Length: 472
Ligand SMILES: Nc1ncnc2c1ncn2[C@@H]1O[C@H](COP(=O)(O)OP(=O)(O)O)[C@@H](O)[C@H]1O
Ligand SMILES: O=P(O)(O)OC[C@H]1O[C@](O)(COP(=O)(O)O)[C@@H](O)[C@@H]1O
Ligand SMILES: [Mg+2]
Image (cartoon, rainbow, N blue to C red; front, top):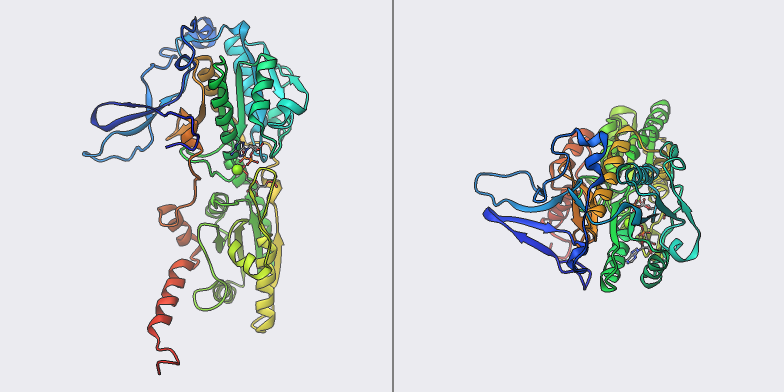
């Protein structure tokens, strides 16, 4: 099931098709671990709340649409504080690291991890690892306290710094052992969670009492299982500013076209949600929906029609859209970044050039095209109010899970509930826009753009039906 050779999924089956995909616990590989009373029981903020502690058997269903005959299906362990904890607060040495690309809310997660550890559990020893995974063995660490992180949620980026590449599992676990770290909080995307899984497996192999916890971060929203990543809403909101600018420019020029390129290497969620939110977008292009430029049902035909109807238009394009067309025309080499992610050609620049060439070559009409590339602006901003709340819940859930002795899990939102998801489920695939789902249909109906796939299939079928020259 998982991609890690060592992972043995903990599956619990119940009645009526109930399945719990459980997370590992340190007690699975270390016998006779002592337990302690959860300090929250005497914390005035929480002791008044009835049923503050989560029942040990509580779980959250992955699918909530059901009919009378459907089996209960897959569930994940519900996040939250437990009656018993597996760490004495004075013995905890926690470490926090941020890896991969930036995302709004990273600083909020760091802040809330520190505050939850300190204020809820009385943990005083918290280290920040500088500069991503390689910081475990190549950089200095910084001591984190509620005071030192007090204001950081108001800033974009990550106070710890981040990096791609440089994951050496043995060196990282050696460093964890040498520094006496026993709780590791790893904030990052799919690559980071793969790295966290390796660290967990090595820690388990060495029988160390260390909880390894992932907190999912992805601006592209491409991590499976979870409802969405923190920072996604903020990025979509920030993208509105670029779309608005494109719309103003397009409206003000003769046959104005505004082109906005947004992030989305393999998944077009930002482009799709930014388009749905804006209502000023005439065409949204994403990696999951192939398109073509020339001929019937192609992009050029649609642009011409929209300009004739409205006098202006806005195109939103995800950076990973149409890469096969770009490679065809630019004969580009396949390049990768330090983490092994595919490096893309600038599709925004390419499509802008193609549209300009088309209209000038065929002398159809004079156009005014403005290209806006807000790529890094949408992820370098601080998180908005709702993302800040989301980051807080993710961080608190992560701390509750580690204190309760769970390990090898990612803290994630499933159907609006905080859960603990085993690493193998988080790293097994990539979340993508499903163009046969209702959301994409909503987008098509809001922009009234052609469904390029349908028109391409129809054009190909028509070509096949038409007699060829040879047959005549
Ligand atoms: N398969 C993997 N195994 C171990 N570490 C990985 C793996 N893929 C990526 N990493 C490490 O995770 C970190 C972040 O990965 P990256 O792909 O850049 O960002 P993200 O986590 O946002 O996907 C990097 O330090 C990288 O070396
Ligand atoms: O230029 P960088 O820093 O490598 O990051 C850019 C890339 O990271 C991404 O934002 C993906 O990162 P996520 O892991 O946050 O989803 C891509 O959309 C983008 O191409
Ligand atoms: Mg990634």
